[in-house]
Length: 521
Ligand code: GLU
Image (tube, rainbow, N blue to C red; front, side, top):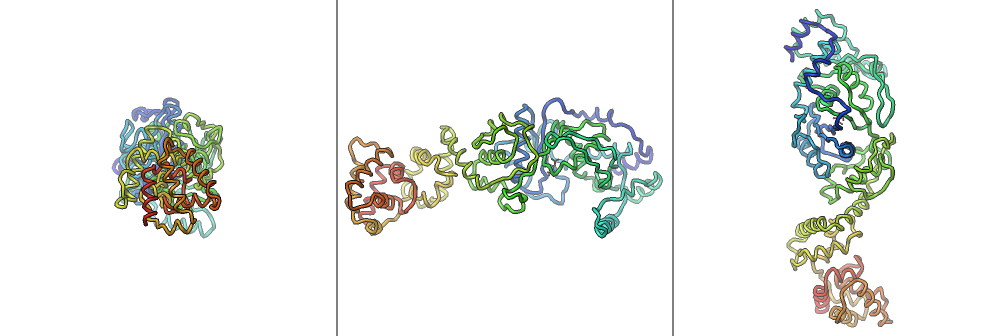
């Protein structure tokens, strides 16, 4: 690069030649053909809800239009890379059910998909810009730049580069290059910024040259800065639509100037409003647990997260709860995305999860998967405490899941202390029952009788009827005490699902065994 720059500068100086011919040889696809969108995070951290939202809207838009969803890792700032972040981003997109069609891991026709492996392309573009005089080498020392910044701050002005190296003569450049063969390259910001119509924010024009100095596009170490890399990649990857956070809206002016200088047709832009906490504060600042890993390990369903995120955003005719990904794709309409920030209410997540869990339980194959997960959870949480491994049988697990469907937010809830009775026998003393009522023998005998009752099928309805009769036959005992006694005998707890449901889920044999165990204690 350095050699090329020197040769080129010395031979031609700025030439102003158009890049159109050159670009044809680079084989780039322009917009207007297939929809190709990209999610372009920097692997400087693990995937969080803000990133998921951007990825999700890109995914939905791609699928809606039969296009491709691309994951590109913007890893040019090597000092900020976080180990494991690149893998985590791909893993979490897979987990969320929105896998990219092309990515570092999956490969694809426009790869490589990591910017650190595309340095040659940025160098080519920078050289082309140099040749045509749209960019220039900058020899300013870090000390000078720091001084400029301090001075601006002292004068209460926004720091900006003063474009000093823009005005070096050809001779001065040649002399300086001899001393410093790999200078940074700056892009000459033009005053004629094209206006553009953002698909969300409408017409936009940002006179960037009047508020900013010429930006560095290629650093002296050969790595590009964001603006150049983003434009070069969006072009070479044939990106048709750029859907990204609204924090990048002002940068678009710079990008358009780069497209203009390079003679490339820009993609369409749609900036997505910010995703904020319910109280309007910034997502990452106040919310500790916004990383997807946290939601995955806490047992939340990806479908619930996607539903919650789109529910608080816009892009749909109606604001419904419980939409699945295919429904989101079918109902999405980019023209319905509005500029208002999306306020995320994470307190609603358990409710969204409950709805999506119900859906899974309703589908037999999904229910079977849930049974497998529940079995693993039970083994993990109760492991050696399990007295009877029959609780791990599919029929038992399925019964529990079906009975608790609609009552639990997460599958994990079923292994919380309140449901421990489903998996292990509680240690209950006869004295605990005596403290509830004097009719322990009478009530327990009647319940045992019910279990043996000829022709009585153990449904919740039939049990409720019988339990009501039992209470009615004991005028000295409150019905609530009858229920409390059975509940304590079966679970050792004062709270939990309805008593009839407890009996049905445990089954007659186990209920009998538990009651007899308490009576003989
Ligand atoms: N790497 C940028 C980010 O971290 C991507 C911005 C864009 O999508 O152009 O958000």
